[in-house]
Image 1 (cartoon, helix red, strand yellow):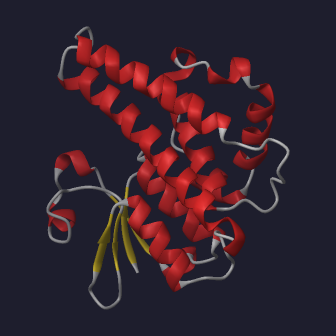
Image 2 (cartoon, one colour; image 1 turned 45 degrees about the horizontal axis):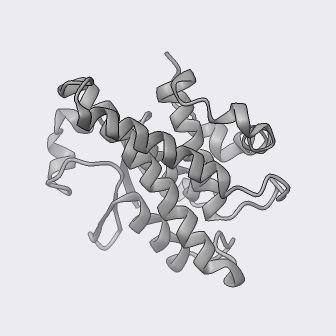
Length: 200
């Protein structure tokens, strides 16, 4: 498998975390690219120039983080990241986490290329705040950090990315210290340590 990825993309990090949790990392050829630069090798397999993009040995190309992680769970079911008795909840939390990241990306895009003082920009930031609180609210801080499912992994990734990009602007931890402690425990897993974005 060949994975086009980026060190700072939260979407790509979700796939990289899932690959490590499934012990598949050594079966992947990682291609780190800057999707904003529209590199030719990425455009050749994904005309949208987005990461993650997974190219299978057959030549089939899979795009979008949610699609890829669900494919990996189906194609490589062990170790399971989606217990049979919590399938609906895991899907719901995965969508919730990706939606939170989408909201944050919208805010960053508006700040970089638009006007951060417009009603639209303010609405997007308010949406990010609500989305982040929603992801944190769905966490069970009493759950074991030793056996996370895909919903847990996605929540960790979303909450840590909000911290990475927005810091004190979105202080969700202030009201949920137990969830913050849970997050810190999971961030110590090898999959998150190995895929941490560069700070600064």
